Amino acid sequence: MSAVELFALTQHSYDGLDLLSTAVLLVDSGGRVAHVNQSAELLFDTSRKTLVGQLACRVLGDDAEMRQLVGDAQANAFGQRKQIMELRRLGRDPLPVRVIAAVQFVDNIPLVLEITEIEQQLKVDREERQIGLTEANRELLRNLAHEIKNPLGGVRGAAQLLEAELASSEQREYTRVIIAEADRLHALVDRLLMPHRSPRVVSDVNIHEVCERVRLIMVSEFPRGLAITRDYDASAPEFRGDKEQLIQALLNVVRNAAQALDGRIAAGDAEIVLRTRVARQVTIARARHRLALDLHVVDNGPGIADHLKDRIFFPLVSGRDGGNGLGLTLAQTFIQQHDGMIEADSRPGRTNFRILIPLA
Ligand SMILES: Nc1ncnc2c1ncn2[C@@H]1O[C@H](COP(=O)(O)OP(=O)(O)OP(=O)(O)O)[C@@H](O)[C@H]1O
Ligand SMILES: [Mg+2]
Image (cartoon, rainbow, N blue to C red):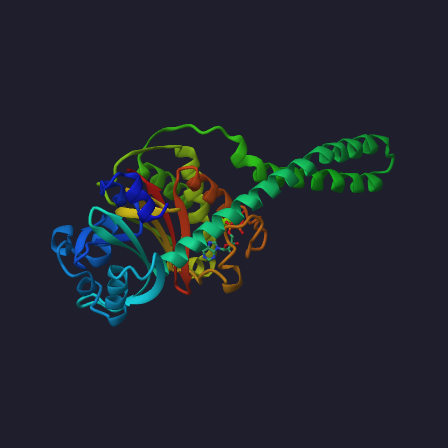
């Protein structure tokens, strides 16, 4: 919904505008700021009280383009106009933004400006594309897995019957290969179907219990050469969630990090940092949240291979010998079931997986 629509819908009450992740400025007929929403306060890093009453073009950096836009709106020269421009804020680098200016006539407020950071816009577009793709992928795989599973039972059963008929043990070698491969495929298909099977068990979750469980499992898997550093924010509140799912999700991410650290574990200077924080005012898949849990898994390994970077969350994408490419798909599914998101930022020497889960 656009700011103008929301504004009309809320019957001139401005509160609804605070729900938007885009910054909104309402400009009065004198060209002065009449109201700003919370996102605008964040963008300008200035309180509503300070912004209201100032000349709009002054707030936006007194740029000629901006003055023209406000002037045109006052002269009623357009209904709606989109424009890319640079926001000049005092003491800050210019910020490329997309401005949608809409002229309307309510409450002596002729002009509504919606301002989105272009970087943020690109990120939201990317996230949405990713979510769409992931869903399509999951659907495809689920169907495929079912199709494979049914005949697979038949193949295995027939091989067993055949095995009983065969006289020589040499020939039975072949049926054993068939049975073993059918079992392997069966296990893979089960992992593909797993997130859609297990019922969710929701309770109060303490994120540090989740982290500690994962840490202990990893310490027992990698007893030497791997340091797991804890950097916990003790103020992180409990939240409603599925603890086992979250343990599985985090374990998959941390295990990947440990596997990527193979070389450094041998050298003895491998490190994984588990960091928890509470983040304020975060946007996840276009929804604004006042508070979110911000969990980071940082490793000092070689980084995610460039050719895999855009695809690591897709099923069956793996850069590891013997990897199924399902660990991150599963982690993403579980985090999304908590209305959260997971993203990776990686360069050689520092890979950071970030998990955000809304708290309020
Ligand atoms: N911390 C990391 N550092 C470097 N590469 C990573 C890291 N985490 C993931 N990757 C890359 O992403 C790929 C996909 O990971 P994912 O967990 O989905 O599958 P996998 O580990 O290959 O197999 P599975 O988890 O199913 O056993 C990995 O194979 C690896 O190439
Ligand atoms: Mg993995």
